[in-house]
Length: 381
Image 1 (tube, rainbow, N blue to C red):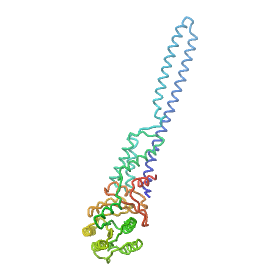
Image 2 (cartoon, helix red, strand yellow):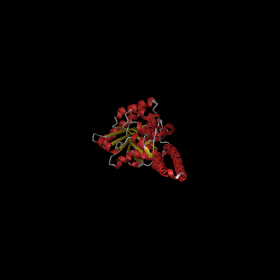
Image 3 (cartoon, rainbow, N blue to C red):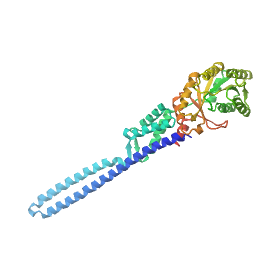
Image 4 (cartoon, rainbow, N blue to C red):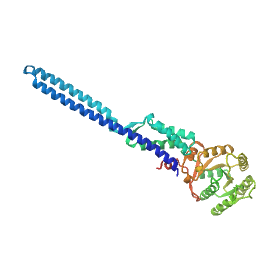
């Protein structure tokens, strides 16, 4: 899952780490060069001292006292000079000895540009790639890091940037339905593009609500797609849930209306309304969806979209939201999402709560939203 973006982020961190390692190696070589120079200075100092002593021995006895004084002064000067050389040397290699580097714009800029391109290739929306890259850059600039652990520092910066961009909380779906139930039968409308998995998702939520003591009826308002009604019938029988259906080609809004009337008559808790999948570019079908919403007057609207759709997913949500206000999103086939960019774009930019992730075909294969799960999956944590 998310293999594409996971590999891109890992490669980005590793490239940054290699650069820091190369700089660390260069600093170490400079340190060794400075040490060699210091050793050379000390050797030359010893040679000069020897010359002074030989010169002193050759001096005439009459000048011995003055010469000794001169030698004393020379030794004091040499000791002072050596002390200054030691301090200068220590200041030069302090950073190398401590293994710390302060990250500059020059360090990260080439990698940030490359990261933006890699994110876009992984289906991250352009504006999201820009924001994420800038957040990573902001987190790293001026930061003092251990040069030997540059990769870990960069990965932590990426993790923090992603967590900051994703919403922290979502809606407790069951609690929301229980709250809405106080005002009567809860009508939940499901919409989304073709093949996103609305029918299976409705069955999963019917199972979840039943587990919490809520009785549902499903409205088979997808009267267009072949076998759509039969698929719902299969799920309804397996779950022990009632189904209201019409004939293929029937008015979808009338099927929803009949299901709501049935729920009121039987004292049921919820009506789950399926609709035909439609593309956001098909204006006539979107108008039909608007009519269903006008008749059913849903209390809660759920958009069901495929995580593997990629960058187009965010645009789909925006288009559908203009027709019928969306209250929550369920991303299906997350277990098949190799790139992961579309999911990141929706999570950070849609501005609509993510309710669940679909992670399989079983009725229990719904995972509540968790931004930590998303980030850990993408970073391979």
